[in-house]
Amino acid sequence: MRAEAKVSIVKCPSYSPSNLEKAFEQVCTNAGFPDVKGKKVLLKPNVLSDSSISDSITTNPELVRLAIRHCKANGAAEVWVGDSPGMQGKDFRPQKCGIWDICTEEGASWADFTADPDLVTIESTGTKIPMASAVRKADVVIGLCKMKNHQLMYTTGAVKNFFGTIPGLHKSQCHMHFPSREKFAELLVGIHETVKPDFSIMDAVVAMEGPGPANGSPRSVGLLLASDNDYALDTAQALIMGYDPNDIPVLAQARKKGLVPQKISYMDLDAGDCVIKDFVRIPYRKRTQFFSKLVLPFATRFLERKKRAKEARPVFGSDKCICCLKCVQICPAHALSFSKEDKRIVADYSKCIRCYCCHEMCPADAIKVENN
Ligand code: SF4
Ligand code: SF4
Image 1 (tube, rainbow, N blue to C red):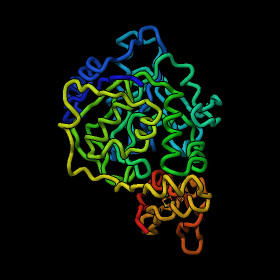
Image 2 (cartoon, rainbow, N blue to C red; image 1 turned 135 degrees about the vertical axis):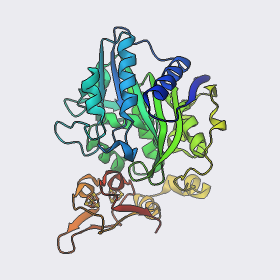
Image 3 (tube, rainbow, N blue to C red; image 1 turned 30 degrees about the vertical axis):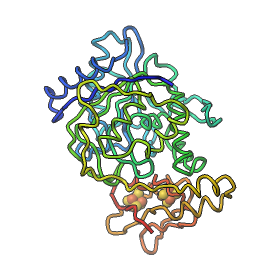
Image 4 (cartoon, helix red, strand yellow; image 1 turned 45 degrees about the vertical axis):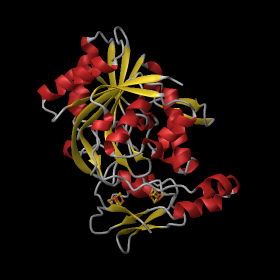
């Protein structure tokens, strides 16, 4: 276990170049930006779906611009930018969110994560899974994550950002093999430990509250964060959003493996002084001791499914639905179909594993996650 990690948190009231540049320089200096001289650098923003900047779903492109410039100014040999949304088609370009234009303007290359991925083994789970070959080819990997709620994992952030290195629809299959929050968190930690990123910068200038990671509301937080330890960074994020870090499944799994540093030193601002009390969080569902300690070890798949059935479920509204069928395509449990007669999505909740991939991918905000 690493004894101590540093997290830098500074105020950044807007994405105006002067505000962002000042905050960027400060977090990079104080949190220890890695040496990139002569190296190939992969920057990994969060491009969950290629959406408008104002939706606050993706990392702000101006942060990507500064990161590219910073790497070049510090002598990087090459700078690549890459991510892979769940429904990525051939030749995907992140144009709507502005990141493609930034790459072109700043002379960085877009790394297509679906092209020729490596088959890697996630040691902690023994899973063989495709992963973007850019991860292996890069000398330095830097996350450019976004502060957001996440319906399944409560928060997204630094560790989960690297789930995007798994190309396209391979991600939704992971939910089938790791259906519970705890198991999925174990996989995310395993993927993170395979990527072994060097540094992450978190865009919390405008975060997302409510039903994230795609259908929540932008929330002005006015902060930029950075660390060379993603578990420390996600701990700071959880505190600021008003969660107990112990309740965040990724951090709980990482703690079990001794990956969360014993002490976090805050440079600049302290996360405890930045807590947003009225941040609209995902309601936490506590696992009972009885279930986790006594029943679960003997539980059959049937019991696990029954447990999942009690979780909030996706509800499909027909008024906003544009019949794109993205939810049907991404659903790893084949729980969705389209009724041509009624022109609406029909869910078979007995198959649904509550992964919320459909909710993440819906471009029309036509799916709500509601308690049964
Ligand atoms: S219906 Fe939605 S939440 Fe249920 S398994 Fe399919 S994608 Fe996941
Ligand atoms: S993804 Fe959303 S808009 Fe598209 S078919 Fe499903 S519910 Fe309708």
